[in-house]
Each structure stands twice: as structure tokens, then as C-alpha cells.
Image (cartoon, rainbow, N blue to C red; front, side, top):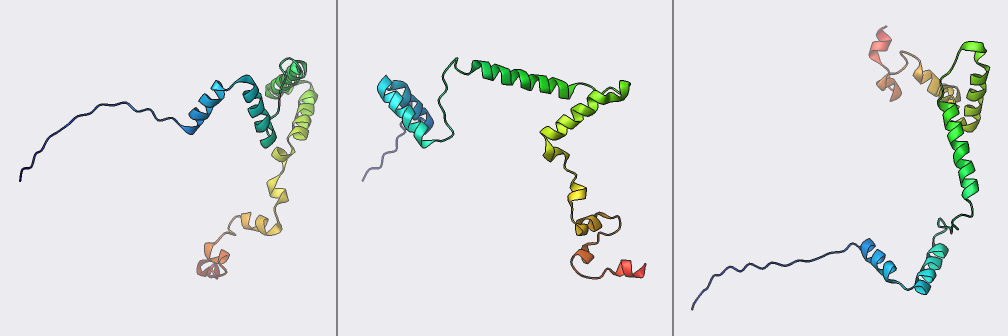
Length: 139
């Protein structure tokens, strides 16, 4: 009986594509009618997608962008104390109206129990667990 040992080296290239890449390649190779049908199917199946005609809403988009830029510039300018600052108070009022959740006072909205737990010296892990605190009793 004869045993042979040998070594072989083999070189090769293999390309593995991600599913998204395969889908992209398929879409790029589609004919125009098939592509339009695929777009319609995607629009029907995904409610977050919508069609957009180039040039149709450019004025409204530009107006919205200009308004947003103006509001950003106004919100970022420095506060001035001169002249009583009436304009700054107006700006603060508009900021509060635009972002009511940012101006909610958490402390005033908290319950009485939560307020008491925030008082200095009222926190004790054993008291929170329902047990008496021997150190506090000694005081």
C-alpha cells in the first residue's frame, strides 16, 4: 500500500455581491416600460414615497428655504440689552411658540412626591425601599 502526500496551490477570483447591489444592477438593466412599472409598484407598496416633478415646486421650496434661513439667522443673533431689548423678548416669545416642548418646566410639571424626593436630605436608599434608616433616626 502506498501513501502520497502532495501540495497544490490554486488561485482564483470570486465576486460576491450584496443583495442591494444585485437589485441595483437589475434596475439599471431594465427597459423603460419595465422600469416605470417597477416605480409604480414601489410607490403603491411604500406610502412614504411620492413622485416629484422637477421644476413644479421650485418656488415653494425656495420660499421655504429662505424662510428657514431667515428664522435661523434671527434665532442665532446675539441678545442686546440696549433699548430695553423688546425685539429680543419678541424673539424669545416666538421661539417658545415654535418649540413648546423645549420650554416646558419639568420641575413644575412633576408630582408632589417627585418634588419631595428632590429636596436636599430626603433621599435615602433604605427609605426608598420602605425600611427605616438608623442613621436618620439617631439624628
